[in-house]
Image (tube, rainbow over all chains, first blue to last red; front, side, top):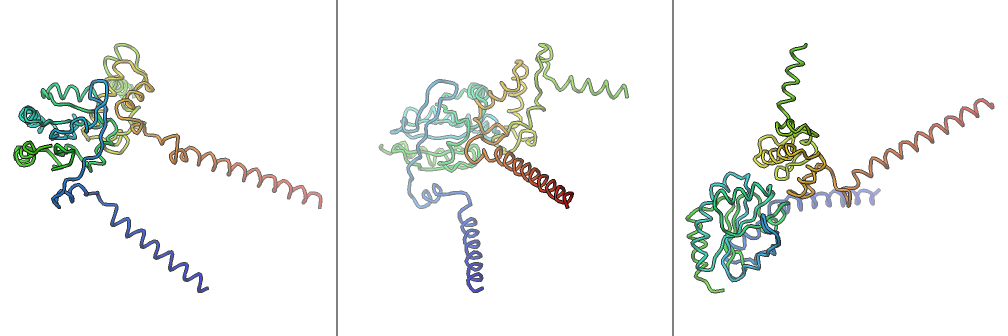
Length: 180
Length: 132
């Protein structure tokens, strides 16, 4: 009888521990945000995807040595539409100084995405993530989201939502002056 | 009654993509496909995602495929090409998802075996009763 009661107590405690674990660890991961808040630059996760509307694949590491404005977007996302001209303007601005915008088109119809890029005259490189998995290690939870990667392949800044001129001036411009 | 029938026919004709109608190759409709594919970003069947921007784009994509006289299976394959296998509103046939197919079979088999056993027992009991 005593053993049965002890077993029940253990089972209840295990259930409470499981619930506590679920409550504490099921929330959105914010390791990138917390590292940035602590003044650290975490290394950018590995990323390899096919080119949008073209053959072959590319890796984020291919742009090592450059400042990369990594922009997750989709043609069906209205705020992505709004920020595209600004991204293109900044791509042209930073290209000479060793920077680039890199677009990751997510869960989109290819022809829609290609038409979008053509419509907005986007000249920066674009990769395609049909299943939307590539954003997970970057803790992407919505679109658009943008991460700034420094010349050494580390995440230096992140914006959850559309970028604006102030963000680009504050977070991107100083990185161009850093050495790789 | 006649008017209602005419209205129904007109509505059905409007629901079909004109190009497919003109080509005389209608094999499916957007509505027919909506419950069998997912809106990947919304995480629900396309039929339930009415207003989501991605759902609208996906519907437009399907409509274009229908207009190009593609069959239901071809359209599903095109959707998989665009969004990956998760776009299909059916569990995977491998791994844990396969249990969805296996469990009904096992449960059905168990029920059938139970019924057969019960029938046998009932028959035997009836025979014993007759012998007594």
